[in-house]
Amino acid sequence: MFLAHNLKFLREQMGIRQGEMAKKLDITQSAVGNWERNHRKPNIEMIVRLAEYFGVSLDDLVLKDLVPPTEVYTKNLRFLRIKHGMTQADMARLLGYRGKQGYNAIETGKAKPDVNDLEKLADYFGVSLDQIVKHDLSKEANA
Image 1 (cartoon, rainbow, N blue to C red):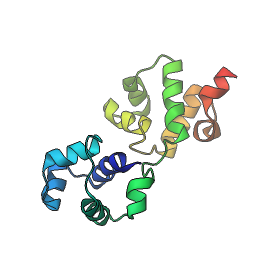
Image 2: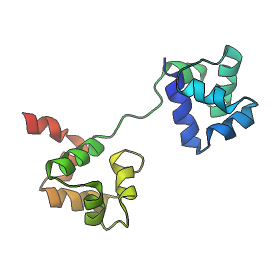
Image 3: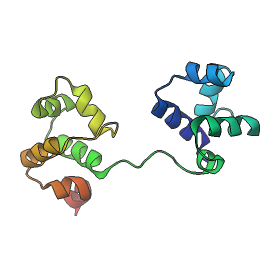
Image 4: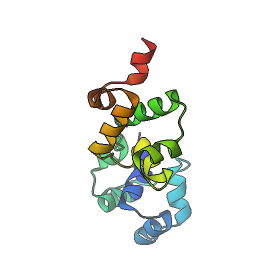
């Protein structure tokens, strides 16, 4: 069952806080928090309302993991960064970002990197774009 996991993901995708969601659904913020932490489960009527609110089917809300899998490149960028003893701030500087937040968003999968940034990183680490995007470099390193 993925209800708790999906509720938090869908709410965050909409860019709303627990309190905002609670107000729209005429429930308490603590109820939303309890559902998202899987401490409690909403009743079936509320699950139907939640599915309608998020525009997903009941099956998807409850039975399917709606969080997309982490892209291979996010794992590879983290692997390469650590392998070369670099911090996220170092990576951000390498890419010309003002702070590490932009790079952190890429490494955590919250933002997609620009192809120019991927090319720059591939060049810097001496790997191909194909390797960064398609292959798990950590497994190849252990082989």
